[in-house]
Image: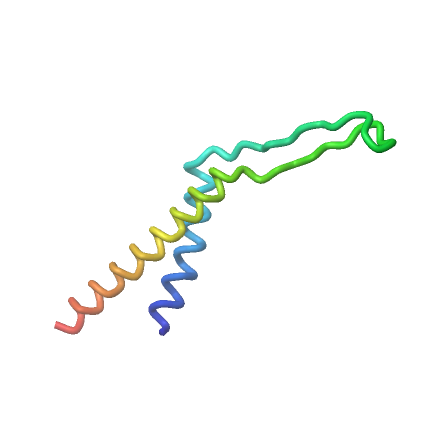
Length: 78
């Protein structure tokens, strides 16, 4: 249980850092003018491709940490 928990925690931390460093986050923002009595307002959206790719990177790092940790435990036990 400890190995699994630390793999998830490490994967989230390392995966998010890698995703912000390696991938380009594009801010999707547009302006709506003269609607419903409001002169101007900005609407921001989340970049779906960035979120999906970042989550896949985090998932991959979690699996990699778990596999490496299991391999090291087996080598130490032998």
